[in-house]
Length: 396
Image 1 (cartoon, rainbow, N blue to C red):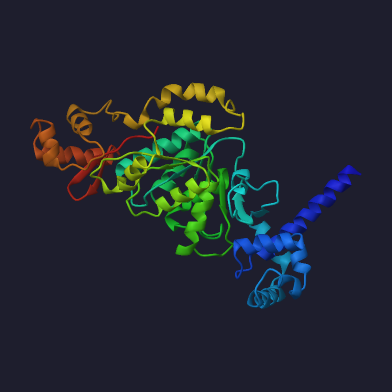
Image 2 (cartoon, rainbow, N blue to C red; image 1 turned 90 degrees about the horizontal axis):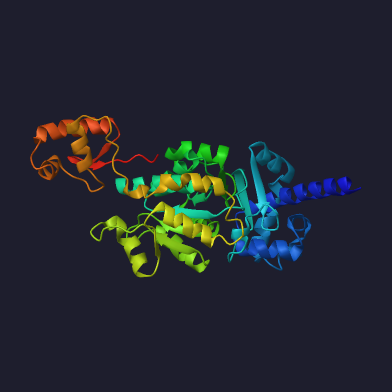
């Protein structure tokens, strides 16, 4: 009898999800009215079966007519089957699989479309965000921070955007960790297109989710609600690089409203990419000085009583995170001339002339240029603009 009851419950849940798919695809209704309509009628199927008069208790006359026209052409069973065949699931706020962190924030999305796994609930989660057009230093920190979090079992949440977001997510997955990508489009659309490899990795090893129906293109107005989900899924937010007027700071405001901890990677006062971060420090944000100290903070923030979920892994990694932000370039095996030039490089762009001065004129500018070209080929340096070079550090 119990097995039969469970089967009936599963069948009922599938029907509810089928009608939730119909309801969440209706374009002319906001999140608040979605919640209100589903609650007033008693669930998505009840909304579908209700008459116009009932809809009119929540919706405007114009919305009622629009919903009627939409319903007449929408085929719930066929559309739901098509979505499931594409490996996409839908969870509503009443489902067990809906993320608990997100459920607790104001105006949580009524439904989420998900590709890949359901977000991990029994471990800390950190949102790593920052500039799309980041510096080589920002790339370095995002890679190291993402990898450190991934190795320690901390889920990295971000928006899969160019720059800091995607770099940190890719590093977390390459380190064997989990990541959640929140899109400002449908989950069937990879945006930006150049992050296709990250998108595929997220589907295979992590999570891609969105509150927007399939086929929804990435529009500017979609990103603030997307950012609200990014911070809502995390226990803390880390800003790696941000200008004074940056969309990243909108996510920070949302995180603070949701009661999330905010941390920053501090930067030089002359660096415009650090203006936003330095202002947040002035306003009281936490500072990430090293991966190991930040990880200890995150595990303290995590209040579910499961801090020891990866005790052996945490112990093994202690030596590997003894401040990797400050690691020296790996010059073993390089000829002396190459090693000297490599050590003279950091994340401040330098010209061959400046490097020559740093090395007290031991090598000519022509020799230094030759060395720089070789270091770029060895992925130990990068040319960030004509005649200006930065050092590049490994994330492993």
